[in-house]
Every structure is written in structure tokens, then in C-alpha cells.
Amino acid sequence: PVNNPAPAPIVATIPAGVEYLTEKQVAELLKISLPTLSRWRAKENEHLPFSKIGRSVRYLRSDVEFYAASKKRNSTSDF
Image 1: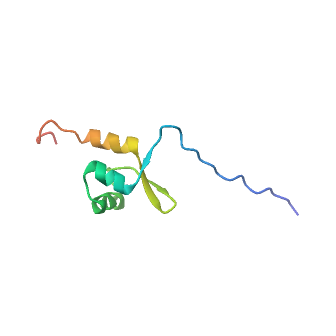
Image 2: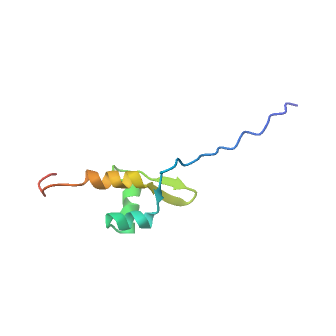
């Protein structure tokens, strides 16, 4: 019989300075509803990237800030 060692567990560390936000925090920051945020995830479109950690949905603060900055306009005709 071959004695195979158990695979090493996968351990991920979050680098210093990386901050994850909850759905509620993101909705509050962007002034949108939780259902809107949920719809964005379901559509798999260009909105916000997110991570599933266990059953929880998390967003990187840097992604949320980048998204908000990318939506900045000088005029309503800037679309």
C-alpha cells in the first residue's frame, strides 16, 4: 500500500492594509440599496468585483473607491 501524506492546508493571508467591506457598508458608502447591490452581483456585469468568503459577500475597499471615482462626472452630458 502507498502511504500518501495528507495535502497541506491552503492558508491565505490578507496583506496589511487590505480592508474588506460588508454589503451593508458598501451600500451605505455608495448610497444605494442592498437589493441594488445584490442585483449588480447577480448580473455579473461591470459593476463591482466581490469575494465570497464562506457564505459572506465582501468587497475590497480599494475596489469600491475605484468604482466610485470612475463614476465621477463634470456634467450630465459626460456619458
